[in-house]
Length: 194
Image (cartoon, rainbow, N blue to C red; front, top):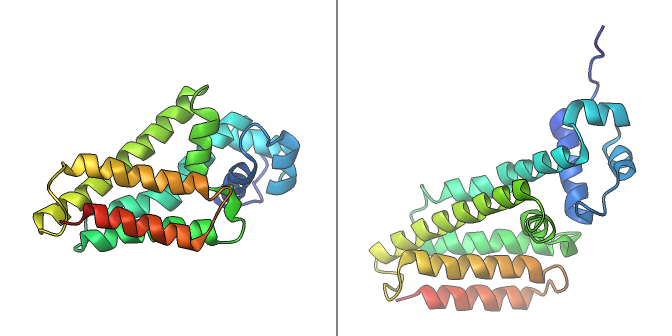
């Protein structure tokens, strides 16, 4: 007779995501997972597979919870500048929250794992590509409304903005100064203006 699971799989996956986010893939041991997730080793492997499979699921969970809602918001955004400012504000909020030195789970994972793990590289590239598309769409809206410069294509400006966002996500690992955020956001938005 099969055992009934006595834990919430989504809740455990969120705990795993937070653990990998804090420690990274390589520094997280199987014992760390068992201790933090509060489930037995057999339940861990029966439910989520091996450590790598759990890591990939956690990265996909991060995308679903943290990235996709912001990407989807661009379709209903009427104010392109507000959309981009909000994107920066979300990065700032995450960075200045408790445990801010952990940075961005996706960026951390890309830096640590993408050079040696094609599955993680594919997920990270997909997130980057979709984020760039959303920002490009917002910038195009701003260009069409006469708010943003048309000196450069929307795609080029989007790459500039996404690079600034990713740079912030790395910088917060060692310096989460609020003034730095404000400076970067203000300069990025000024560069977009007509």
